[in-house]
Amino acid sequence: MEKALQEIEESYRSISRRVKMKPRVGIILGTGLAKLVDKVSGRESLSYDDIPHFPVSTVEGHANRLFFGRLAGKDALIMQGRVHYYEGFSLQRITLPVRVMKRLGIEILIISNAAGGLNPLFSPGDVMVISDHINLTGQNPLIGPNLDSFGPRFPDMVAVYDRELIRAAEQAAAKEKIKLQKGVYVGIPGPSLETPAETRFLRMIGADAVGMSTIPEVIVGVHCGLRILALSAISNVNLPDCMQPATLKEILKNAAAAGRKMVKIVEGVIKQL
Ligand code: HPA
Image (tube, rainbow, N blue to C red):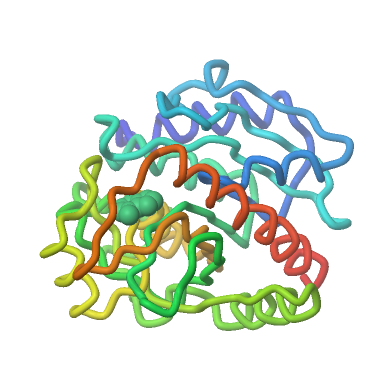
């Protein structure tokens, strides 16, 4: 058996032996959204350390636990903590949990991240629902032998972000009187932030927000046929002609403000499923 496939199976078996729930929804919590876990009832959790092959994050603000429980009346599987390419993990390692969640039976994947706003109409603390993306990481998690049991060699990328889930997010935001931005996310490798010239370039090529995560997990999610909803917490807004340094403290504060709105939107979406 392909080594990658064997690792996925080992992770899957280790989890399914210990947890009997069969959730339809999987959620990857990025910076700012960790509090969603407080809304989960009857929860059980496993430490990533206790799951074979799961990558363990080194970044501040990321716990490393896999939660199972009920959220907004539905069973859900929630990853609190994710790893990034800039931490030195391969994209295969970063995306292994997505395929493990698929094996555990999820059909819908909800992903959150913190991102820098590029659209001048955005404000720090806004939430953006991702309508499309640009992969500028210089990498692709599907490079290597195709895992045919998960999906095709050349997955279609015409409608990556599920239209119905975007609509559900818009409805949930409207109901809670939350302003929801919508736009294109560009993924870069990081960890250095963008120069003013890079910021101008990213805006010119059509991006509304920039970040260092999400794209690998989304590509692997599309490959295995998951319906995807992704939300960005806009933690800072970068305008190339008056760039200010974005401090980690400010990024975390604004991501938390956006995170409080995201929690309500995600609950509203799950209720509609
Ligand atoms: N650039 C890239 N990634 C980010 C940013 C940014 O300005 N803010 C939060 N994540």
